[in-house]
Image (cartoon, rainbow, N blue to C red):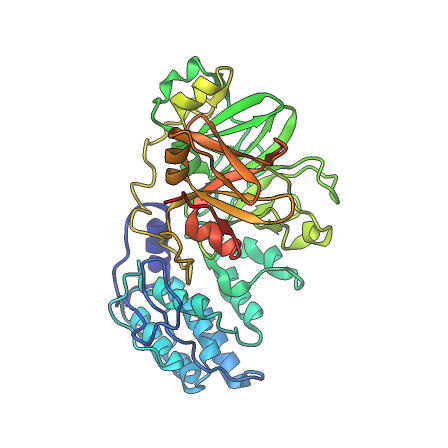
Length: 466
């Protein structure tokens, strides 16, 4: 039996690179579709029936026994107690354990436990790995979690990273703990400006990187992708391959302090103002937690250890949640560097070594996401392919709108208009900005369709006329 610590290492590698963990069965529901469709077109079927009421204390003890043994091996006797309860809600507990114990017999036993608890027959699912397939079912079904679930998950996850304790400590946190999973790395809790490494490995934020002029930025190829931000007429371009390494930048642009997270799994770079936020006067620094929520990276504020929804900017735990903080966004334009430089000749770009004296690989992810999401996302909106790129906007009246980028590019290149729900797209470089009918800009950013639509399930979708 392979040790749990070895499994943790393998899963971390799979999350951070393009490697794939294939041990154990691939799985899929063979029940009727129930109208729920996954990112690869799989059907999830109808959810199992679940009981009401508390868990038997013997079952709770069994779960704690399994959680406490992830580094020594799966306790099969305790697992049998969980399965014998016939409580389908406990499939969430099985999913959490499966995240860390996917290989060999532990993975096989946990998948079998999921089958027994839910009554679902699993076979031939195109998911990336068994844990993803199991958890996709649970998310798609919106299956209720068992009582005491947050506390049980806290016990398990703090064995992996004790520094996550403040996130679980807020009992009023607006976090759906069912959707939270480990992203394969530890927390980045380094002080602002610290260029050292994290103990155990993390995704290290880039703080106040060195910038060079457009002319000095010729080191970056014209067909390389940048994420462009403009504040008070100051433009800065962030090369995609650097953002894939750091996934977070803290920087001052146009006299404003910003945090710029990039969720590689969602294809989404966003820019949040960290100053002048209603309800909070203190300095903010954004960091990557190492946790995910439905394949979206979970960021947090370093000084308060408050979780902040990366996609919406809403503080969901800690002092910032108590203060009701929602970070204000500004537009991030995804463009080819040559096109961005043409439209913004005075732009800055991050220096080739970012001021850190390091060499960045040209393709850090190595096509990791080419075959679809590698973490659980549950059911997806079937109107577009899961990983089609869209530009997302939320109007002043709160209406979310999405524009497929390829179709928008074609329409604008042919002289057409791209307008939906009072939002009009205009080109900037080879990317887009969004405007109201009065010409007022609205914050916009690109994302994969599955990510935008899961955070905005009632989104309006612009499509070109036939």
